Amino acid sequence: MSREISSRSRELLQRLQRQDHTDYLILQELAKHIDDPENHDVLERIAEERHARHEKWREITGEETEPNRPRVRLYALLAHVLGLTFAVKYMERDEERAHAIYEAVQDEVPEAERIVEEEEAHELELVDMLDEERLHYTSSIVLGLVEGIVNLIGHLSGLTLALRDTQMIGLTGLITGLAASFALLSSEYLSIETGENEQEPGKASLYSGGSSVLALVLLLLPFWFTENYFVAIAGSLGIAILMIAALSYYLSVTRELHFGRRFARMGGISLGVAALSFVVGIVVHEALGPNL
Image (cartoon, rainbow, N blue to C red; front, side, top):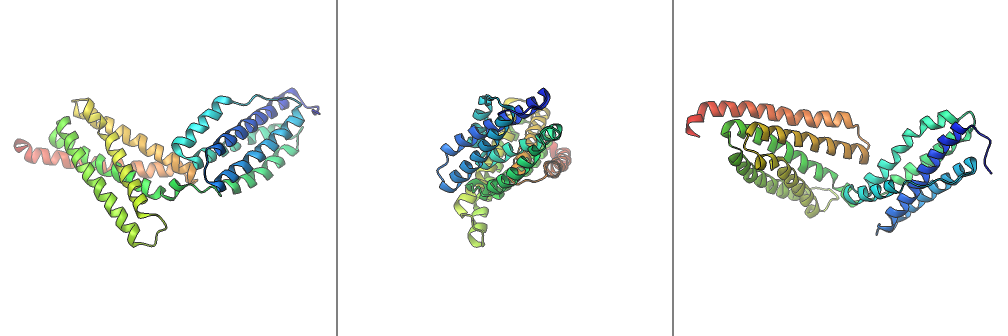
């Protein structure tokens, strides 16, 4: 039976009701595609808690709500591309936005915030139980991307003002970038194999080497599509910043790290290396220009 509350409070609670209904369907969908029995069980338990909360809101509002079907499909895609942990933790971030609603309805529905706080604490414990392979190799992925971005952006910046030929810069960057990726792959393998790390050396090296090659390909794209070397290096720098932002955001969600500080640190290092390499490129071109 519905409770006598204002139309405004009813509307706000229906938002929560719809969100919990949608999240329940998302978690059910994700659980269908999980082979690991422990992760499957965790998702099912979180899903049931969202369903129970949805039912509590439905008892208060006395109305049914239609779930957000496009959101369900979006999270299925996020889980496929960025991993299960990212999708679930990103979904949990929506809980923070709901606190404004609890404050708005607390006079008429005082138990709303208590209900959410109790279940939210338990859900966070369950989310931390998720065990995803790719997260065990996050350090290797970060190493590959950062090495690829910082090393290559510095290399390309220096070559741009030294050679001033996009085709030559792209070819030289490809050769040296691949060599650096292979060196990173082998060094990562040896460091994991000889250390006391729980990672498998083969997988760790593939993650780091593969990430480095990905960074290499993306950063070289502008040099393959334009003959203007200033446009090319500007495009490469832009791609580097976007990659750093994406990586920082991924880590801020999955590892619960501060996005702004990590992005500023990684971006500052990359741009600093690029600026220093520009200076080196100018010096080399002025000193050896006639002989290049």
